Length: 118
Length: 118
Image (cartoon, rainbow over all chains, first blue to last red; front, top):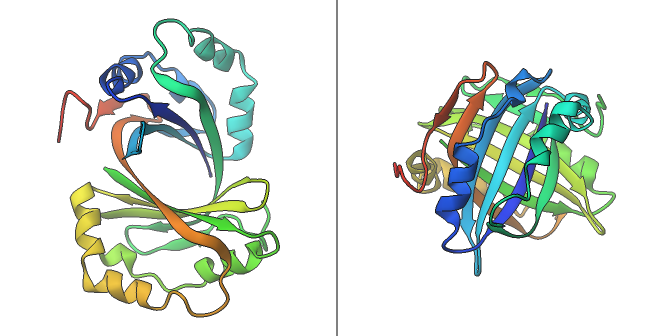
């Protein structure tokens, strides 16, 4: 299981427009092999910006990587850049490997670790 | 829906020990009202550290907040500080409000936004 996050520093006053762009977009992400779920997150407010992040859960890093090399990835990002820029600098990508999962019934399982490479 | 993340900068060479501490701990988090799931994440390797993060999904911010004020929270953090310190500085907390969720069948729902405050 792999979580791909893209962090955006949104200038004060642009929060509503930034959210609107995301919430009104047409997404085809769920058609990709290994896609589990997408979340749009609003994070903490910092000195000069509000932190937002996309948060996509993939079955594996390999599924995520295959998507980044796909035609649909290219298409999804071709439209970016049009319209007013609503965040500072570039989005900051952070990819996370899920090492352990604890579910609401208390079941814990190790998916990967320094000992058990997958 | 609320995601609480605590980011840790782990020094090179301490990754295995850091993971071991987490993977071998006894957790009672799943007994808390509003707990959805916990994930331990291994993030990108940076210049002088490996980024790790805890990642806890709560039903709402209120559930998360109630937990931070509980006796079990105090107990869970009382043991911290014992043993060798495996990360640099302090963990960096970031809380995220989930604004939109897209599931694997393509169903999208807005949970919160600048327009629809919850």
